[in-house]
Amino acid sequence: MKKLIFLLLFFVNLNAQNTILNIGHRGAKGHVAENTVASIKKAIELGADGIEIDVFRCLSGEIVVFHDKTLDKLTNGSGYIEEKSLSELKELKVLGSKHSIPTLEEVIKSIDRGVILNIELKGPNTSEGSLEMANKYIKLGEINSSDILFSSFNWKELSALRKLDKNVKIALITGDDPLKAIPIALTLNAVAINPNYKKLNQDNVEKIVSSGLKIYTWTVNNKFDIIKVKKLKINGIITDFPERI
Image (cartoon, rainbow, N blue to C red; front, side):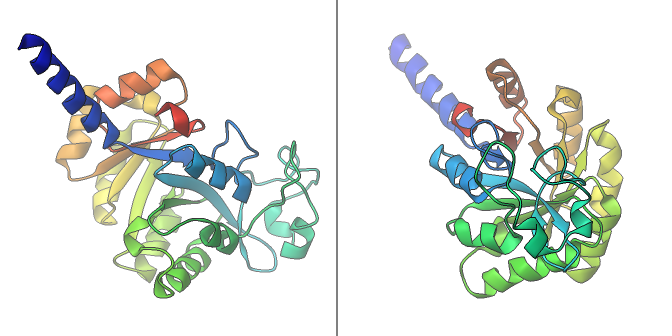
């Protein structure tokens, strides 16, 4: 009987852990060139519930999926991404791959309905174009509005987004003390804070949760760190290796 009870408790605990969202960082960055359609598809293949991507507005106005301000480190090109047109960007390849820089539209079209998409607004003036693109595919019935989350370190950009849409889901990203983000998060009617996992502990997790906010932490790759973070009972883990969550 004791053995049976132990097994039941084990599986209950396992199921509880599985309620934590598994979010692929820039797709499956640990396996395929980051922020590419191929990387996003790989993350879904590996069991990710959602995808976190980064966006900039390029010179010709399109919203493109890329992490750095400059092209030098991640592509075979150089210069600032915001100073290049889409046609110029499409001539480049993401380093270590045959893949090009995708647009936000291409990414949205590549995922199945029900996959969560966390769009991190990296550059300025990204909120309007990103929101328009998301709304386009929500209206087409290809994605769910509940599965779209906008996040950013640039809280002013999130404020601009909130002015455009009072219902869109927002998360504040922070690399420092996550408790400092709570007042702004509540002012913006955000749903979550996305903190660096190294800054989390039982005390600040409880304070964030008690304020009504969810926690999607980044970027947790080490198996021991994953176990540690899961014990804090956060809502989601952003990782380069979705198969480890």
